[in-house]
Image 1 (tube, rainbow, N blue to C red):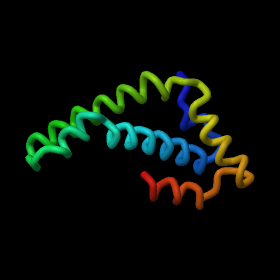
Image 2: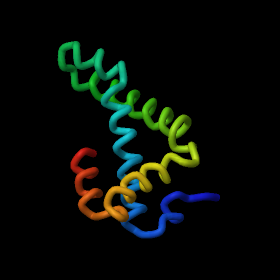
Image 3: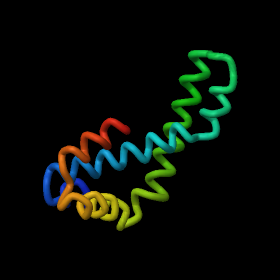
Image 4: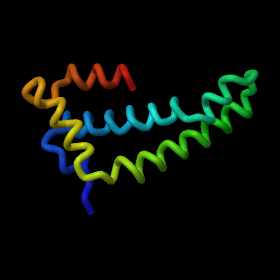
Length: 100
């Protein structure tokens, strides 16, 4: 079984890959149409929680089915970051973490 995190050359690359995954899933949750509809309504803690739970499940499923299984996704993200700075740096990881 292929594990993209253990296939990484360094721990920093593995963390960067994980941060890219997390950032993509977070964007999918925030941009989910049900979240936009819920934000347009009056605040209701129960409905808000249910909506965000459903949106999170949809986002993870979408990401896993459409993006994460693409063989070049993680390699492209890491290679793009590495090509600009001669390798993935801790500074890039910090900037990505602030976004996430």
